[in-house]
Length: 638
Image (tube, rainbow, N blue to C red; front, side):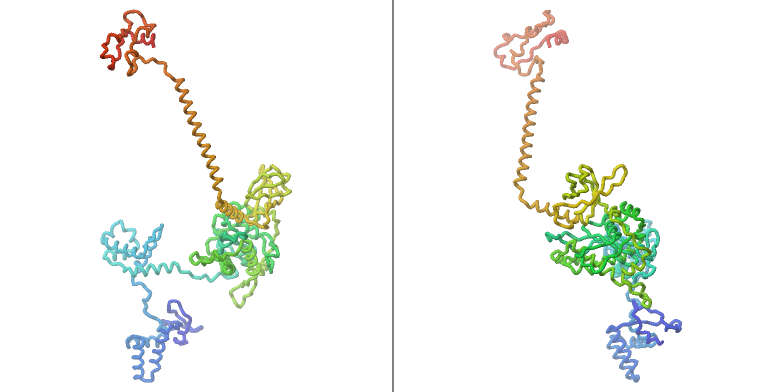
């Protein structure tokens, strides 16, 4: 095979040079074969001018063709002659090869890594250093000069001695180079390469406890959940409730959806249990679902593989696995859940995108009319998904091998049935009540009725349990029917009593999320009602009570002060009160009847008549009392 015949080969990324040989032939040592397939106008123009030169009949014509080529391509005649030599030596593919260093950085590998590492450091722990700041950091380092050799910077330049020497000499890349290096690094980090997929036969799932090989149906089930990209409305008010969550269970061998749970509640262990319960039981649907096929997939797996979310590590899921006898495994890598993530993507793009209220996966690209056009209710969406899983997904073609010569097209349901090791066990629904984790306790009221969630439930089976405490288990998807159990006591499990249904409701189905939403709307509407008279009356009562309490406290304090004034009045006689008149301060012997008559103990008082009349109005000094034995005086007369 000639060199030129290889020029029309496959397009290789980056115009890389490869060694190619004809099948069964030998490669000429040191001779590169360039494979290139380029239909661009620039490439074709080069081919045309070079071909005109090669096809020239004589030297004069060749000389003129070279001049025309140089003029057409904007190059010198010498460059054109080198192009001709390369084409004759290596092939026409060389015309597509430009500069060999195009797209490369004219800096050393150390400088490249140093800039990238600086960028990574600037993006850690909440920091967001931009490209210009990194170039400024290089300038700041270069300004230190010989100080960069100090111990302070030893660790920073330990792996970059060349960078250290350049910075000391004040040499560093330009800001354009820094920008190009960082942008190149970001592009490489964000590059997404499509996975070709695992082979159909011999598929494996890597778990934290080892590798599981998928070899038959009902061997490995996978569970995951997501929030669907569609807005739902209430079936009565037509107001938007929100986006629903779906918890999905799939069989890893056949790719069939085994069961699911749909609701407004954020995915948790209870939703996982309900989805698992739906998967285990045989499925029967009413004619209103308009199904063309039957959903025959059920059973119990050998392994249940999940991601590492906390709801998959719950104590409740452990109880279910012990009860039903399967093993739980956690995925080793997020990519191991690609099969079930593909189903989520198809639900959004192949089903929900047809209906109004579709939001898309990106908030920025959400249609502006999504809220205005929302039209699906939770019940209607469930019917749509059931029909999609039964009539479309499980009946979809599933090739057994990528080898076209051995490929056998089977539908997913056929593949599931063909690799069942045994007929799946059919469980009674009461055996799976453990999956109904949501439980509450109530006292049975008159006529065998109980109150739950603001609704009254009644059942003949509860009549003989009036006044007793029972346990109620319920499915959040439909709370119009509850399962009643006796209350566990003396370490004995409760026994099934019967089914109780909500009374005074015309609906056939009502989820707990819808009930809570209805209550919320009623509370909001109640706020809009004018209750000012009622509220003012309540406030008036409070004000009157508070006023009465204040008056009562005032009367209590007044009575207390009056009582204290009477009971605590001092009986001590003040001998010399302040600002007293002479009549009040005159002390005679009659004031002390028990005083001794001896001359030593007689108190000598001052007669007011002895005082001049002019001085009587003036402030008088306290009279002096001569007492020889003061203690005896106090004891006798106090």
